[in-house]
Image 1 (cartoon, rainbow, N blue to C red):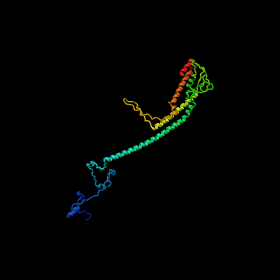
Image 2: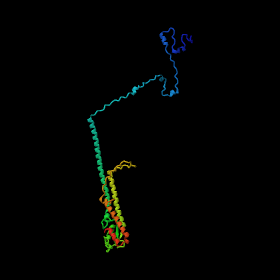
Image 3: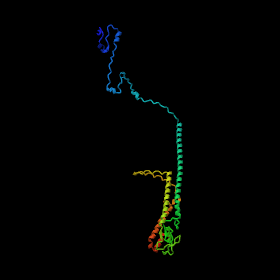
Image 4: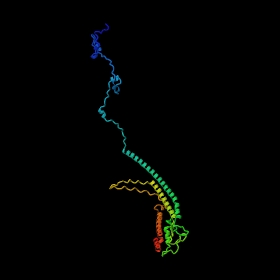
Length: 342
């Protein structure tokens, strides 16, 4: 009757037992028996993933990914990793000994040609620099000559001594009426004592060598120092010295520009025993010479040294004579004349 379970049909719990196989029905064939032994799959709801699995990058995203089997990549064998890499060899060209020598010779010739060209360029630059130095030296000498020529003319024409015909040195004049001629101190004192008689007195009046104006006789002092004249002469001589020094510096700078001097080695603070001192640097090349008239009045020049010597001797002789003049007598005048060798 409907609604009642058949006595021949098995219960559902028996069908879900181990193996999931239903017992064969009576009178069923073998084929039906094998068909009844089919497995029964039950849908089980998937479990929700935990928070760790949700945040893990390696967690599967769906159930299909979980069901797929993981594929394991084969790890490389240690022998394969330790095996050296094979490098393909590039065939290098082979050159003969003669070809190598020719290539070396060609490279050497190129270097020699480049060096020769460089030397020619340096020589051309040195020649141009030498011309420029010569022009600078000529210009410096010309400017020095232009500046020194008026002073030289003044010394030769206006500031010379009428007795020695040289540049006046320590000018003095005779105390005479209407006479103002100046002479070197050494020249005028010799001129005055050359008129002294052997008795120690002047029998004739001493006159000016130029205007013949008679000078005063002792015991009055017959000499007077021309201080203004002396200052003018000294300034002119010093001006020539300064012009010569500036010109020499310009010529030396031009020579140093053409051939710069070698720098001196640094001096050691403490010299060790047994160590030789460093060799001195080579001397600087000489500069172009000064013009002859200017070089004579430069520092250490011939005419400047002679003028300084005559100035010193004349001042010493005149100061000694004038200091003793009020107390001198005939023997004293004779001693001065003998000292002057006149």
